[in-house]
Image 1 (tube, rainbow, N blue to C red):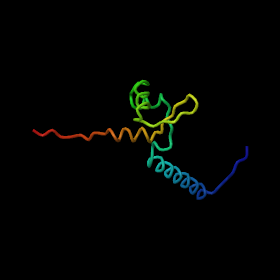
Image 2 (tube, helix red, strand yellow; image 1 turned 45 degrees about the vertical axis):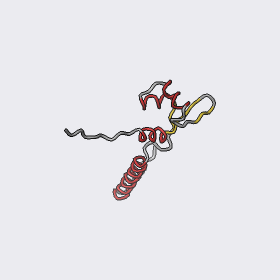
Image 3 (cartoon, helix red, strand yellow; image 1 turned 90 degrees about the vertical axis):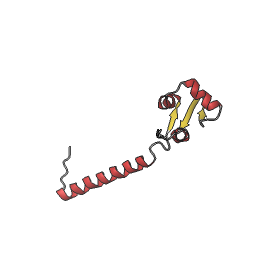
Image 4 (cartoon, rainbow, N blue to C red; image 1 turned 90 degrees about the horizontal axis):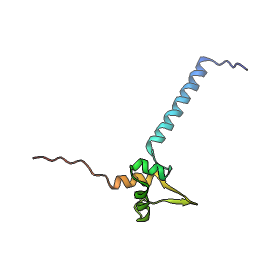
Length: 96
């Protein structure tokens, strides 16, 4: 094994650069946490807490778009997020 020696300034620069790259990756992931991800039937059922049959009904009536490759069904995570946002009900205050 070869040992490489660097100055403490060079080591600090490398450490800072890695930290900056990590921060940029975190920011990019937080901007669109679900974008560009594809989910299968099991993922969507677990996410929405629905049965496979309910998800089949959503596919049949066009509630949630999907892609099919061979016998495998996939859903865009952004489409699931949009579905949830369309059915979002804001809290309301019942004043008496």
